[in-house]
Length: 379
Length: 123
Image (cartoon, rainbow over all chains, first blue to last red; front, side):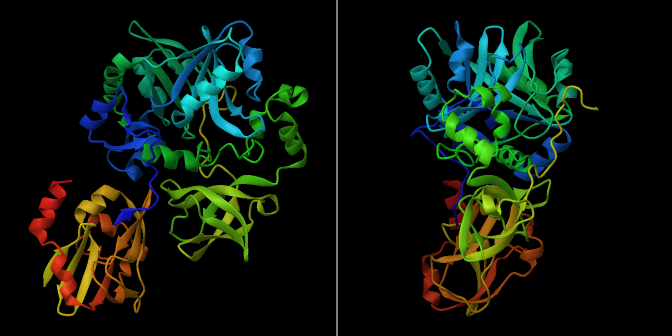
C-alpha cells in the first residue's frame, strides 16, 4: 500500500519545527512535512475535526505562514505597484485579500494586507514566503522596510463558537467584524487579532509571541468549544468554502480573472491600472478569460483529485486542481479550471480517474455557505 | 486457515487455493477516515506486487498491491455502500477482495502475525 496523492509536501530537505511542535505531539497529532515545516495533519481524524470546526470551534496552528510588516514613507503607493488591491484606501484596522502579481499578471501568491499602527501587516503563504520576501525586497524602494516577524506564531480559531471561546480570554475581541483587525490584551500581552480565516466560518487569526503561544493554545483548548485541528481538515474546510489554495488552484501561470478572483481587483485600480499585468487583467475583466476556476460536484462516492483531466465528450476542456471528500457536503467535491465555454454552472462534464470517467457538474462556489460576521449584516 | 502479512500492510488469509485480502489495522489507522474503496472485479488477473485496489481517505488515494498472483473471485460488495468498514473492522468485514492463488509458493516470502507486529513496531 502506498500513498499516490499525499497533500504533504516539502520545499526543504530538513523540515523545520514550529513553536508548537511539542504541543501538537503531546496532543497526539500525526506530524507531516508541509511547506518546509513539520506540521500536524490530524489529531482525532480529519472527518471529526472538520465537522467539529463547522459546529463549534477549531484551533489551527498556521505559524508556517509569513507575517510581515511593510513600513516607510510611500508604502501604500509602493505596494500598489505589486498588488491590484486598493491599499491606499485601507483604513486603520481594515484587512483586505490581495494578490502578489508577476509582471505578466500571473499570481505569485495570495495574501492578506491589514492597516496596522506600525505599517501594513501582511500575511503570506508559508510555502512561498521566502520567494515573496525576495520579490518584495527586489521591487520595493529602499526606503520601505520589510520586517519579517519570525518571533511570532500565528493561530487561527475558526467556527461558529470561536467568538464565545476567545472573548472569555481576550475581552472585547467580539467587537471586531469580518476583515477587521486590532490589538487586544491577553492579560498584559498585546495580541494582534483579525476576524478572518480560511474555512468559510466566522473566526479569528491571532498573532502572538512564539514563547507564549503554547500557554495561549492550552488556554484556548481548555474552553469547551475548542479542539485542535490539523492541516487535513483545514484543506477540506477551505475546499468546501470554495477558497483557492496557492500552489494548487493558483500559480504563476494563472491570472486573477482566470482564478475567479476579480473581487480582488479594487474599483479604483480598475480605473487607474498601474499594477503588474494590468493591461492583460483589465482586458480579461472586460471580455472574460479563456478559462476559469470553477466548483465541481461529483456523482457517486469516488473522490476526484488534483490532476484529473476534465472532458466534454472526447475533448479535454480542463483539469482538477483540488479535490477530495467533503465531510459537510458528505460527498466528493472538486475545484478546477475549465475553458470558458464549459464554465457555466450546470454544465455536465466528465473527470477521468484511473482510466474511468466520472460525471461531474459545474457548480457555483462555495459548496457550503460562508458564515462570516459581516458589519451591517443581520446577525 | 493461515494469515500472512506484507510489508505494504496488506493481510492475506489463505484457505486452500483461495484467499481473502485486506489492509491491516495499522494501515487503516495511518490512512484515517476511509471514504472510498476501488476493489477489483471478479475475473481480473493480478500479479504479485502489482496494483490491485485503491483506498481513498479524506486526504489521499493509496494503492493496494496484490500480495500474490492470481485471479480475483470478487471484490467486497459491502465496501461500495460502507467504505468505513475498513476503519471499523479492517481485518474482518472490511476485506477488499478474494482471489484464487496462482502459485502458493509466493506465500513463502510473507510475514506471519508475530513478524508483522515486530515490523510495525520498528516503523
